[in-house]
Image (cartoon, rainbow, N blue to C red; front, side, top):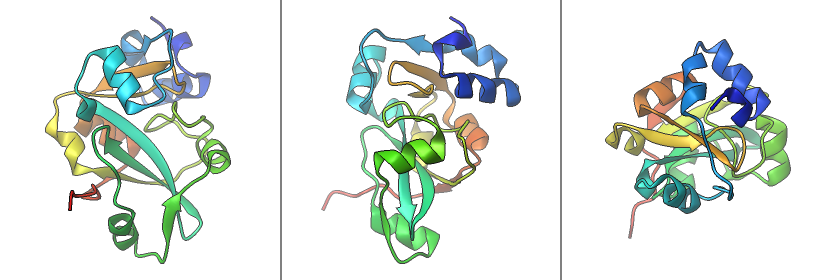
Amino acid sequence: MTTTEAHPRFAEALRTLGLDGLDARIRRFPDQTRTAADAAAAIGCELSQICKSLIFAADGVPVLVLMDGASRVDVELVRRELGVEKVARADAGVVRETTGYAIGGVPPFGHRTRTRVLADQGLLAHDVVWAAAGTPHTVFPMAPAELVDHAGATLVDVRERAS
């Protein structure tokens, strides 16, 4: 496969980051892989091997949180980590305006604007994770530490714990 399988903005980000070889590993599925469960089923991997790229508004400023597909983000932990008053899920318009991608296809890097990025430590539990390649139909594999590095993320513990 070629980067034509990925969103053009993401394909350009791969070139800019020197990740041209990654384009051959991008997988396209005929059905949408908009949710982590859809992506895991299509790939044939564990749900926790999916890297979700989620945009939140922290006191109105967009922030990207990278989380494994089996977990939920604890917004209170994100709030404390960022030292802000309020953290809430960003709406679809803010996600597209900030990243240049639609919900369900947001990759961990290659966004329209530079945002602060937090990556939950749980991603590092795997040798490989899968993330969106800019569309709800495309995903790519990458070692989690490499993904965190390319995303410019700070490793944190923001996973919601079962009560």
